[in-house]
Image 1 (cartoon, rainbow, N blue to C red):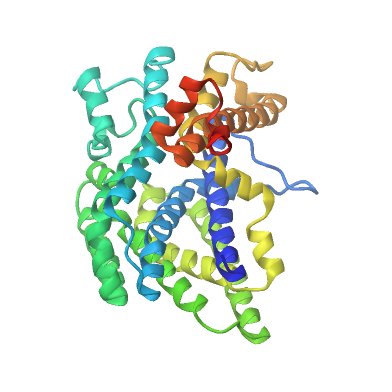
Image 2 (cartoon, rainbow, N blue to C red; image 1 turned 90 degrees about the vertical axis):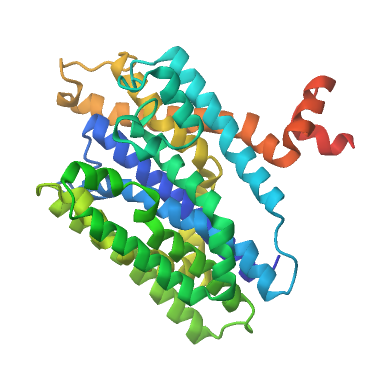
Length: 397
């Protein structure tokens, strides 16, 4: 792998780490109301935590990038496309085991935290989650586990991706424009409905098509840029400036969202209207950071964010559930009847929730997810039968 290719992969991983960090900040802020103070007093990063739900939108963008990058690379190098069976297997082995484990443990250990739909019943609710259609209905969108709604969006995109990728390979810019236009039209139509219906539709796949399109276009452009001769100093300076400006703009968007969140239905309406701009910021941040100066790339893809990227999927699944268990079962007690009235509890609970979530996500990632990705179900089964860990399989052959 060339240094340029490694750079853009590291940047994408760093941004994935940023995405899960934003989501965690958002949920832990909701549970603790801790304002993340800045040194000097009087200022805080609360506006970042408030806007942390946008980390999910960054996840969608990055998911589309990672899915389409092998297609863009194969097309540029006149090589065979990735096999559909391999694509389906890798998606399934990545997503399903941790997801199934989470559903089973929630239903067995703490069903009171996320009750199943009262109108459909537990069996139907679980079946809808297993089929990844739960996000299509208001009564099941947040049942079992509130973060699962986005997995429904992801899986639905995975199913459509081979068809979308075919169009993108032939006409990338036209396909990009078509997806962005479809997303804007869908949200515009949803905005004419009553707010409850709009809010539900605003969290469904068509409402995020601009972000998925942006990720795919970024993968296409990354391959085109990588094929060119090494960029001179002036080009790298320009890319660094684009990346830095995009990051600054991202934080300005966070601050803007924090300002309008107090307006009636301000949060979802702001998201709906600004998704094309968020997609443009993500495109600029990814390309600018990947092809900028090495110091800027290393800042975006620092070790902490790269580690969070590795455990990001399981961290996403488990962080909110674990934090709710810690709070609602009194595992970390406050000195006041309302925990949020205790400043000592607020920051310490926040820290305990972060540490617990990362530790548990790391355990599931390294004990289950990565062995399955590396060796597959069959390889891991052989390891278990022979009595040694899956990580030693390669050495045993």
